[in-house]
Image (cartoon, rainbow over all chains, first blue to last red; front, side, top):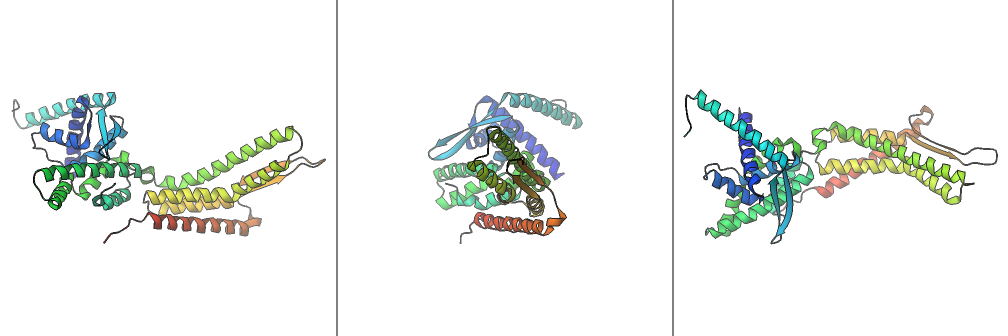
Length: 112
Length: 230
């Protein structure tokens, strides 16, 4: 159960990151802020938890990165690749399907 | 400069099987993010120490970060994903490089022979290469194995199996050269195998490589131990 919940959370995080990074390139801190803004501060994840996911997405070819040094600190900018955008489309379709299914199961006819 | 807050996290990530290049990058990014969060908290009027601990809290606990990294199989080193490879890869590397050296020597000697008698440089070079093949290559490969195992914090079982296999392959490597004389054709021969007549030599060479491998492992490990600060 814990694993499924964790996997669900990971899928949501993946969806959000790909969605944000398909719009423009961002680095980790900026991305964490954008996630908070996008979710109206309701989704509070440990900000450091973004990085393992970012690295894995890059390793799978869904993101690409470039390194820059700003004020003596390394800053790695991420951006969605063409493959990442295709994966995002699939994830969004899957998400809509899941949401519709859950709404149907809960007896809701429309979403708030 | 890496933040001290992350030294134990780095060690934990390595022990969780995360590849060193990902660990280094994770720590760099976390340290940079941490610094920005500290600035943010300080900007809100928090005292430096409070800002530091609040920033660390916002990043997530070490347990959470390690669990999240461990969940990403793509971030694990191949030694953590396929530990059996640690036993087989150095053995194959040892055999492969011996075959490659031997093939290069055969080619070189054939070319030199076509041009007349083998010169002194060729004789010395051939003997030296043969010596490297028999005694140098096993040491090179046990060093590579020791370094890889320590840097990935692998459990000792599979690397030890790799060490034994590599030492055995090294001990079983033979090399012989007969230089051409009038009426005698030159011969260059090499191989890997166990000859019962030379069992004592085989065991001695294998043990020497094993001892060298264990010593190298201990030395590299001692040098890479995280420094604990009071």
